[in-house]
Image 1 (tube, rainbow, N blue to C red):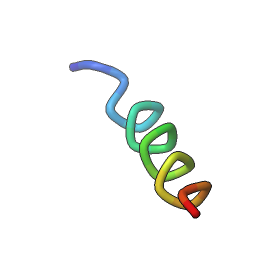
Image 2 (image 1 turned 180 degrees about the horizontal axis):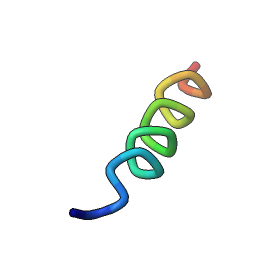
Image 3 (image 1 turned 135 degrees about the vertical axis):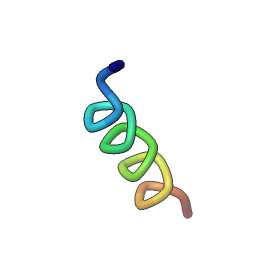
Length: 19
């Protein structure tokens, strides 16, 4: 199992930071 939690957090942060 990969660190999906961390990946999801990174993606979510990128989306939230999206203007």
